[in-house]
Image 1: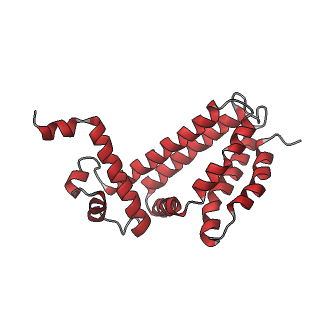
Image 2: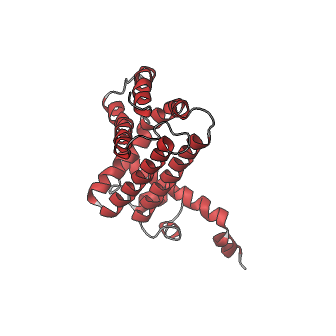
Image 3: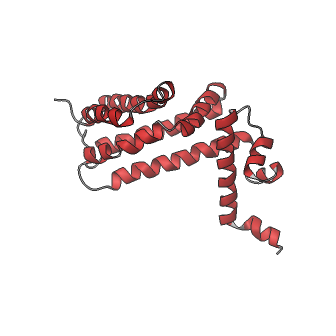
Length: 205
């Protein structure tokens, strides 16, 4: 077996190369947009030939699909952390609010998120990927709220779903506010956000 073949069959190396391409593509999409970043630009940023990239991804659309899947894996990891943490579930979720706000006010990551949404408006396959990701996120959040140790056990499912939509709308809208108001005070925002989220996490009296 040649050294080249060994490298090609090395799962760890292949995964490292895939991640190298995904990071390069994400950077290109942030800077130039999905349509402005061609495979030549991605290959240059990744430091490998376009032909080499096609060993791992069949198309630019396949790269986007993998970026969405990677984001989903990160999201599942965060939800699992919340589920596994002992103690009061409301306290656990409120304690994680800082990280959520930081993520949703990160303009660098946000630029990529906006580009994905823009592409979803034109590309039904990308739209379906993002919808699937959002559906999984809502399912995970619902389980935290009504599953074991969930603070909304016994609450009507329609009400739980509506609360999740409000929570996701608030968090998702933070990027727009940070972009339009770069001087947004995150600490003051968190002071206002915590009691709002706590209300949504607890049964109404």
